[in-house]
Structure formats: C-alpha cells, structure tokens
Amino acid sequence: MKNNNTYMDKVYSWGNKWNVFMMIILLAFPFLISIIFKAIPDWNGLIKGLVATAPMYWAVGVVEVITYIPMLGAGGSYLSFVTGNISNLKLPCALGALEQAGVSADSEEGEVVSTIAIAVSSIVTTAIIIIGVLLIIPLQPILQNPVLEPAFNQILPALFGGLGIVFISKNWKIAIAPIVLMLALFIFTGLGAGEVGIMVPVGVLFTIAISRIMYKKGWL
Image 1 (cartoon, rainbow, N blue to C red):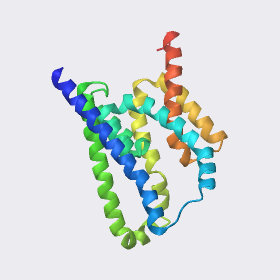
Image 2 (cartoon, rainbow, N blue to C red):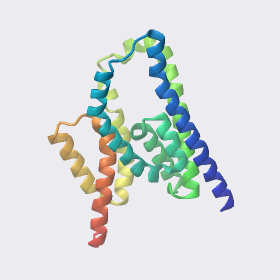
Image 3 (cartoon, helix red, strand yellow):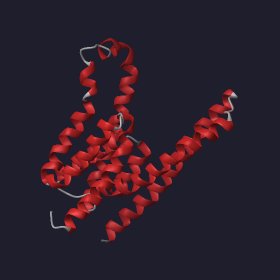
C-alpha cells in the first residue's frame, strides 16, 4: 500500500503540473500570434462567440471528468485530457488493454495498464501524424481515390463496433437502453459526427441511471 500511495502521489503531482503547463502553452499560442502579426482580435465578437459556445463546453468538460476518469484511471486521465481524442482513440485503447489484461481501471494493475496503453496510443498517434505530414503530398492521389473513400468513413464505426460487441455481450440488458437512446437521437434529431464527443458522456450518465433503476427492480 505504501508503494501504491507513493505512485499515486507522483501521478497527481506530475499530472497537475503538466496539465497547468499545457494550459499555459495552449493559451499562450494565440496571444503570441496576435502580438507577432499584430492581429488583435475583435474583442466584442470574441466575447459574443464565447457567450454562445463556452457554456456548452464547460458542461461537457465537467461531465467528461465524471464519466471518463472511472474508466481511464488517474494517470490515464491526465494523459488523455492533455493529448485529446479521448472518445476516438484513448478510451478504446484503454478499454481494450484492460480487457486483454483482465483487470479493471479502479485496481492497481488497471491503473498501470490504462496509463501505459494511453501513453503508447499518444506516441503512436504523434508518430503517425508526423509520417502523414511528410507523406501527405505523395499519397494524396491514393487518399483521394473514390474507391477508398467509403473505407475511411467506416474506420470509427468499425473500431467502436468491435469494442461494443465485447462489452455488450457481457451484459446485454444494460446495453439496450443506451443503444435505443443513441439511435433515436442520431436518426430523429439530425445529430452528426461532430456531436459524437458530446453524446458519449451523455450516454454514459444515461446508462448509469438506467442501470441503477434496473438493479433496484431486480432486473440485473
């Protein structure tokens, strides 16, 4: 237990430091660009834009912290929130690694497995982006080939479909409610791919609420 406390203390300490450091870098970039190119933004328009959009992201940010941390663990969450693409990349990698290792995210082993999986995912993603930037021009004719276009559109559905089968098969009763909710929302409300990141936390909270009701009624 002593070693675990020491490890977790370091996770929280370095995680907080790097998150603050990255926040400063992200906020400093637009300010430096404005100063270098003398392109001061229209503050009136900026404030109006923030008033219209910021509250949604604040709500999503709070919900994501509540829903993702139990699935990713402390170390994995710090890495994920800094590197981004949680629902598309980090969460599937972490869940897949935990599934293969046969451990849960709230265990000591799961904490380590999830952190390593997300770290490797971040490194691989960065390496692929670098390769993509270097080869984007030579590969452009291939990537823009109409024959391959349908395949690119199915990458995320294939990824989440493979993960979904694994977890749905464990307890199909819990899976019914969120599947019906998401299908109804995306079919009848016109939501698109851009809203997927927002709907994941909503689906998680909805699933937890429905699962609790089903548990109390003795259906699970």
